[in-house]
Image 1 (spheres, helix red, strand yellow):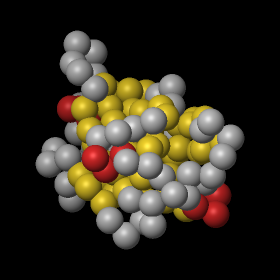
Image 2 (cartoon, rainbow, N blue to C red):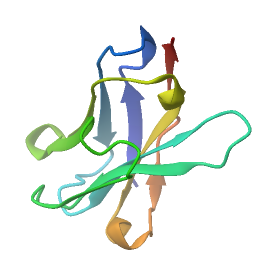
Image 3 (cartoon, rainbow, N blue to C red):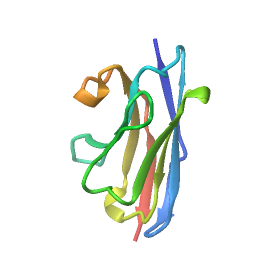
Length: 120
């Protein structure tokens, strides 16, 4: 069983940066893909970014390409999302996920989420 805990959310202004962290425990996630998703009030959860088990392949939603960077540090069982040039539309609860076949859309484990609020 894998437990995921997100941190790093907060209230920032348009154009600011934030780095989210996702810490995994329970078992190593070094063989799992990991990803970030977000959900705004009244909207469905949407994909943000994903990274493969070795860290050499990444995927991004078009809306965050060039602004967000996903990375992982398996020695510490941690994944990150560096968010730059934040926009009001980035306001959401951000969730991390892990899954052996995550890049195919099969995510087995989810965190509880961390709130990101961008004020304009």
